[in-house]
Amino acid sequence: MQRIHSLHHVQITIPPGEEARARAFYCDVLGLPEIEKPDSLKLRGGFWLRLGTIDIHVGTENGVDRTATKAHLAYCVDNLSAWKTIIQAQNLPIKESIPIPGFDRFECRDPFDNRVEFISPHTP
Image (cartoon, rainbow, N blue to C red; front, side, top):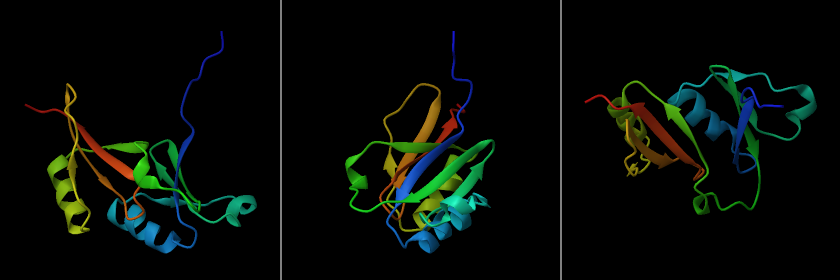
């Protein structure tokens, strides 16, 4: 039987030409390190990030209503309240997520309206 053994990368999109603003949020605010994108893909725009063993591809795409989707990345964090403060300092509205057993979480939209979740194992 064949099986999927890991996740290689995920992709989000931003409008073309917004790479500098996206780097400011994802690299500077969230602290995700940028990694080299292969030369063969550089003309497409965007950039790549690394989180542990997973790559996050930030691609460019026109004509997308990012507010219309529930698709998102969920970042597992140690100090949820500290991350709330960081996100609020960016003037991004916080939305409390529906509770799920064993976790505390909240969500926001990045500067391009991609849904972003921050999640932490519940500590009573």
